[in-house]
Length: 400
Image (tube, rainbow, N blue to C red):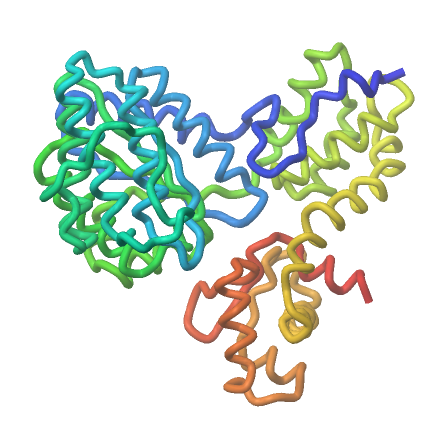
């Protein structure tokens, strides 16, 4: 019997799978970036884009681990709507400076003071406690540095000082930004401008962002030169070989295997999406009576996997929508019916959604804009929208 205690699969938000299959190209390319930047060679920052469930956060964490192994200072933040960049970025850079372990306490204290100055700039004397800076930096704020109030000027000064510490050691600083599309427009513009300035000065600082498919458009709308500022990598579902490896390698570690028909059935069921692979892998393992796991085992476990996805992946997102927004999502699903096989995100024209609902497109703008802000849908091109979650339309239609 396959032992459920030894189940190797890990369906979870941002949780690293036991086998990070299909991302070797991105990991190898990032190693080159790290070496080039540390040696003072020109290199662009990096942006990863893709749907929910393709493993962007997992890859972002893997890239960060690669930087740590090289001795770099690293920090990570998750952007949120309506949240200023100052405090989360300050926390990330504080961690990066600690990881860098610069040998001069005086220089480190100066940079920590600049970080504190940057973070406290928007917190006045009467600011609430939750808005005050309390990261454990005991060094006094350095007044007159990174505290002008102009986020673009302050970011350049902040990253210049932090980058100088890294340059002293022949290393670098990497800032990892998850959900990058949720940054405020002013912060996006400032971050792009700072990256542009730093790339010209040759300081060893890079930004690695991850976000939804429309992130390049967000950056381009902010600064036209962002197309040349970042290297864009689209993270997609896995091909058949990589998906097979994601299932078979962890199983082999636990002295189990899949037969060929089972692997084919798993790919048909999951579409190669990493989160789905982990969810189906866990369900099939728990219910399979023996090894090798067969296509029949996959068929038996499929309803359990679908229930898990319905609650933890699809349902949790649907519940975030208001009743009006849910109507809009269902209308999107109805308008896209029949396209799941070739278009897992159900891209449709906004006019078609209005037609399904029997309303004027203008009257639906508030619902659409709110869903865009919540990250449940995105607009890849003018007049068209799509789900950020693969097969979300199929899920909605199955709910009746």
